[in-house]
Length: 491
Image 1: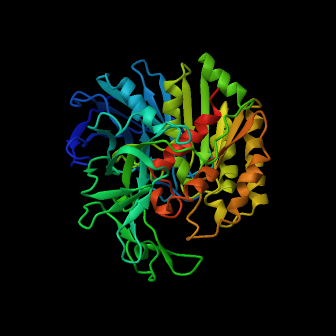
Image 2: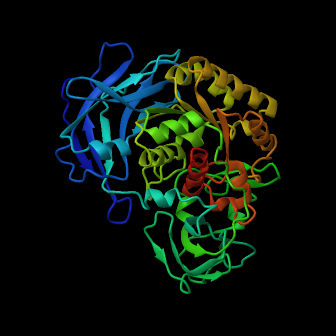
Image 3: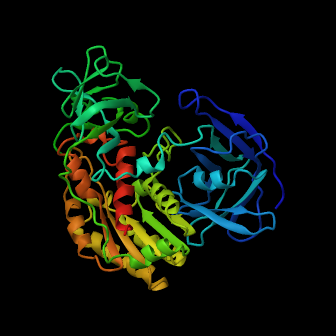
């Protein structure tokens, strides 16, 4: 490959004084080889820190025409010209670029002086993707060397641990009373309260008062809060944005930092007894996958789902502190940490999609992968309009298409966390879980995030655990997703 050396730019602070973005830019080289979008190389000589909480490759791109959603694959190219697959990115035809998160791989390979990549488009009836004229490919590396908290803390099951780690709360004022929010348990001893990004620490007695499970803000507390009317305003023009509520009135909604900037993260010890659902351990299920993990055999895992499965609203997906990745990437990091298996992870998910889309792309983006384990993560967008019978029919047909290419494939069907029931009715989505359970077998298991979230909502508000207030999980719930799925792959 022709060497295309990079320039670098240091951008502004994102995480207190120790998180900045280093951007390496390279001119993409086109190729006449079918399916190749472009090639490029980065010189790492000026990157001082070779450990990072976030590394990603970005390419401004254009899509020629409408049609099926295109899917790209990023490969790293070695000195001898051989290629190794890294990550997949499926995009809408309206997207202006392609992004690939490569944090784990970068941390293992950043000692190299130069990194070379090629982007290939997965064969399908989708329109062709090409680099935007005059634009540069970028390697973006954060100077923060690790996520806000370690893997073992992110993956400590909430239903087993006597220590809650960074449980999130958004204090709300109702009828002019002091803003407050609820924890899942009564803390024992001192608690630690920080901002969502873990960059600010708040003091008990000065900034908040703990009353059983309740965290109540003091009169002059610097902790952010909202009023109930701000959550559920009367006007469609209320900030930040609104959706109509099926119950009447409106519900506050927006992506980005609005909700996370107002949530606090709380760590505490407790002596409470878990009273919620205990996720399945998949006993006598997924035995081939478990055997591969135990024996160190190579394993390919595929994830096909909607925006939640892409990692939407996870801080790591957005490249923000505390850098919790989407549940798929978090799960892969966890599995790799406990197994000698070489795990290939293909995430072909796309935001806004429903199970019928999964069925339509399965012949191109799922079945040909011949994965050993396939995770299907649809339901949140189906739940607005797709009857249970159609949702299950789509799921079964998708599984059949994938199984036709690999009869030994195993499946995890993910029962999504709940939408905000003040936004839309839980029906028909509340019928998806029992219907999915009917599909279980030795090779098919259900990850029940729905029931876990339902239990949390008996104590906590929806705004405590969301990244957009209607249908995206925040970091706390993303971790629960990964924990529930990981339980299925235990002993």
